[in-house]
Image (cartoon, rainbow, N blue to C red; front, side, top):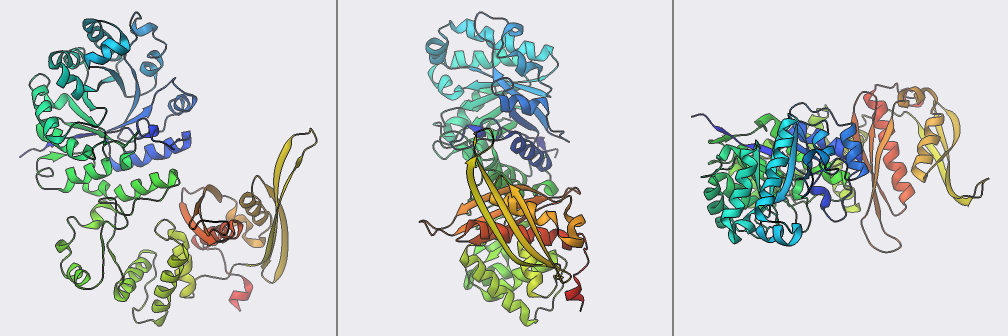
Length: 538
């Protein structure tokens, strides 16, 4: 039996950006777009061109996508204006995109109170706007705002609005549960009614999560006939968020009842990127991932020791509804020394270290990992630091250089033109091949100054780190008070396109930062096969 196609529309960059405390930079948007494209979503809504400088800059230099259609967002034209003469609509339609999504009113209450126009005029606004998009040879989508509330209040008018969009050439008519108050049984019934007027393969669903039913509502709409699902990564969105694509996608791809009937652009191979995409978003937002998130959380496939652990090892299906590897996650057996050894050995194999399981150094490494995590280290998001720790425990890291000491001074003063500035200056003393080298660097912060000082003269290793750059620097406070313990995460990259994360933990933020920085440089030297120092060779 041929499977029907379900299309996936991501609005993390637009609707997700309305989350309290979320403010995406242009670079954040580019990185998230590429992760979504790699995952296999069909549409990526990038924002509203012309509405703010950030969205405009993003569309002016849009990322190159392999499969996803970049989509701009805006409103239907204003009353009393033509589509070609609406300053809010024209930039949306003229953006260099594959598709255009326009939101319009479908609840007669809003037409009367917010727009203060007749119902028939509102229907004309929708039709004219969609027609203008189609004439520009863009794929048109109509976002039927507050559709379910509008349908319950005046079904004839709500249906007339969406029918006007469809008749004008809209590829997709998106039924929006804008305030998130509709329940699954209502969604399924109303979508069934709409599907008698508009074909299901032209219908989409967009649910908010105000009753914690956005995922259930989206799946109910699929059962009722819609063939596009909209949502965001990790359920970002205003108030309680949007439907969480990170939960919806694997359900559609893996679960009986959906997998056998439908197919998406997310193949089994692409689904392996799901956990990485979810956690990457949290890193961009500098927040801790939800450990208990379905499918992708660090605890999603975690099992306590004892009978559960034994059962899982013998038959994973007993306690795991899908294989963790299918979504890029991994099983975690807690409170079990043997499981700890197994996890460590598996990680070592992943980084190319084959070690005898009976090697006593493995036990010491297991204990060190537990102790470090107790202190606040987190290696789930800092694989490079874990590799450095593991290799050091096994004696597999060359001694490139030794840090004798470092010092950082932060000075706040007036410059020559009387401006108040803050300057950081770092001094680092290292020993390379028995030679003591001292370098001084300035920066816009202590970490930047330390990085510049180390780069200035690392002897024969300087050429290996010429293309090393610090991409991101995030700080998380682990304990409260003036003596708080701080965890620093540094993301680094090189000219080959490699990216890696390192971590440092200390009550002193500069000390934590320096440890993460050292791990990053050492990791770079190791991966580039830099020669060992003379002292190590002897």
